[in-house]
Image 1: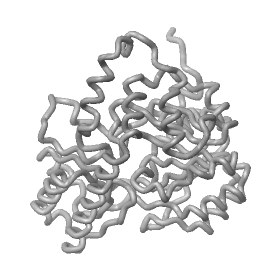
Image 2 (image 1 turned 90 degrees about the vertical axis):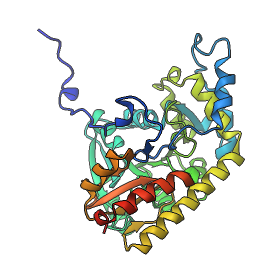
Image 3 (image 1 turned 60 degrees about the vertical axis):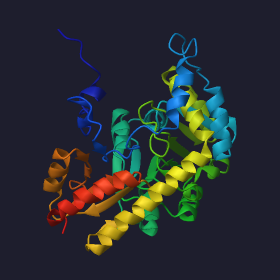
Image 4 (image 1 turned 120 degrees about the horizontal axis):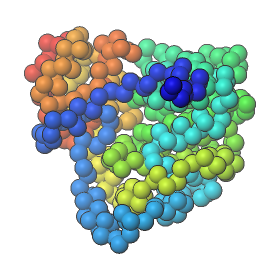
Length: 361
């Protein structure tokens, strides 16, 4: 007789992740990968740094620095917080999973501003929590008065807010969210700032010194182009970090990831230019959408959500041409999300969209 898993796990369904077709059938250098909001290809900044890092005598042979000491110091300077308010993770996903594990008892509720990044929904369920959705307006904005009423009635253990939102791309009203954090101290507010580096003025991370019930998660996967090495971090009150460190798997953060993430933080001029190029590319997309009367949503991140008359067909045709975009039609009617890259990538993407304009309007 086979040993049965726990009843809690038996009741779960495996997370249906979107296929990463680019990893099958060999590598095509002409592929434009604009579906997962990573950098479209390796950023040149890292190539000489990688060569220097991998020549270290113990990079492969030794376990990584569990404390992530150098990277913690770099994040401290970047965010403007104390070292004891930081926990480094192998991607912000791991941090979100640990938060759910540490703070949710079976049957307790997490309220998600939806549509959203659905991985956190999975982590809540995996740890026995219950998910409730607070639906955003059709334009991606939030009715904060209604949200306050919902929180007061539900008294959720966790409120999960993505800032800027995914898939709409709009940032939250900072002052309003901070007031809710103050007014609902029994709820832990998780602010997922995966895309905040494109505009740090919208960040809520500075508030972790003022409130014990706010946790900010960030990643090096998006703005810094390091999705492949998996590095992220949590910023929170020191007592929250002490709690997370009770279960945090520090050896999961590789030295390659730690060194490259620190290298990113030490090169602000490079990323300032990179972010400017993405902003310029977004303007080109906006111009195209405006010229062709295509509905779209202005974004504070490195992606744009827009509507197409035939989203399924358009995504299939683009894929056949080696252009990968994200079909969001199942959660927002007729919606497609496209990652915004550098000028050359934008030219290629806009050419493909123009060639298939009949499926857009």
